[in-house]
Length: 158
Image 1 (cartoon, one colour):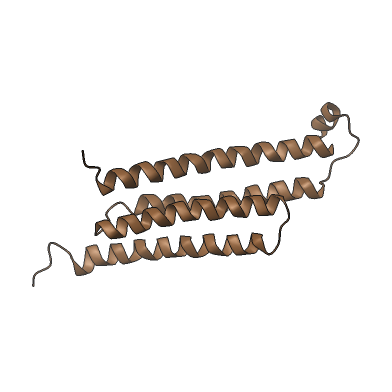
Image 2 (cartoon, one colour):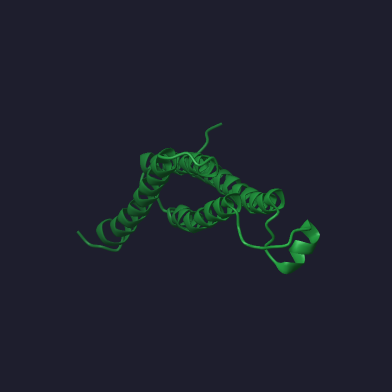
């Protein structure tokens, strides 16, 4: 039984996207947990529930919100890039893209952990790695579209 590159691409990619969705849910819950732990309420009605007198934010809550926002901002281009890369040219290009998808997920997990734990310069290093991977994925998409539509077009005459 042989597994095609398309099946590998679909399976790995969808698993990574599902993992990313769970991570986003975790970060949303972590923000709420941070509010409960520090006693910082998001709204006046939450102050009554928590038994606190004031709102505002703590460093822990700020950090939880910032890492969640950053994750949301970076997930959208990742998912768009993944779904845009459906008409790959060659098996090696699809496998390279799969490797990039997995490496991006790993870099983002490392970034999230280092952000929550306030570990610099690791946070910046992992952010930069994930950003470069995402840029490479987008460039691969662009090259793929240009090649398929303008250079290797089945309607072009030689």
